[in-house]
Image (cartoon, rainbow, N blue to C red; front, side, top):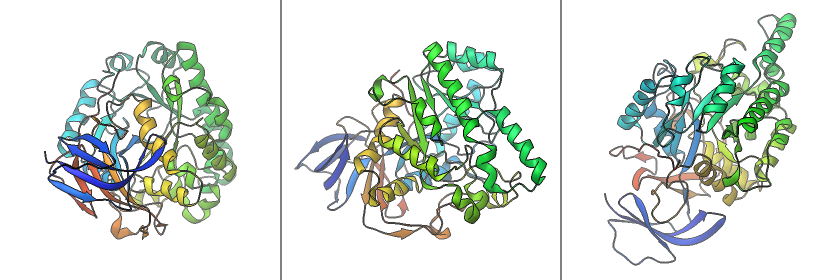
Length: 444
């Protein structure tokens, strides 16, 4: 591989911002120093720009296999790289669902052929595949995924005996989607009795309620504590759930970690009137108070990771009545710049953004030699211009589904270049697809 020298960049790394040069050789960070005087095949003057580790997104749905009318590993990894995401971990609710080791490995092989970003895939749990779950290799697979609440793909695990056994026997990290199904069904029946099939989308956070989230997440945490299971709780959305998580010990020592997604930081229920089903997610977008409480917990380290839960559907699917429109939306291309918008608003520091989107996912999942700007680590790097405004429009959206909940939004920051394993995969709106991403490995 060619060598690259990045000069005069402002590095954002491990709680500091400082000017330095970075030398990339053989796909790795070979040197970081105030000034590097050496020959390289390519020299980039990054004066005025900011260099950070590539984002590790621990929760995406890229829809392959079986749902490729919505998205593909190729298209969505391309959008991710344009958004500064160099590694992703993809969920098992595809078609067929990833419930056997054979189906899991098929996804890895497909990604090896087409993904522009680094990749891992989660093994899915169901009510009847415990033996397959326990075969999962912790060194080569990101986690076990349990849907403790049905969502897109209907992989609900509602047998409490099965849940108990998975938490008891798994030596791997378990990642959970937490919403109590009985509560959701009861709320649905209540509002159907009033509105029939014409339930307003504004009632989504009343149906998939605070209580539904808290009841499920508190049960998951109780199981994890009982069995000392390594647990990661996905896409938290309520103020009440924040009381379940700790910030009095270092991340490396936590057995239970927490995540928030971009949409739960950006949107709130006041926007259903304008955006309708385009901001219908599970868990639901909730109140302003919930949004603010979750953001506060992110800043004080009760929440450890920022992710996307990128879950595209076609506009034809989304532009439906409440019950017919699926939950989820595309986010990987715009997640980092959305967080940088909060930086411009004075709500979060650059150092904290990098901590939560790069360092913390690497620590939580024990990703091997990624997520930090360190000598010997993979050269997954993102160059940012923090003063380069652009508007999200149909003609610059890269998702296969062709739309974004951020359409019409102007972001002040722009991803200029993205390196994946030292390869300049994206530069000034152009892609070099000649080298694909790599399978993530884990220090377990």
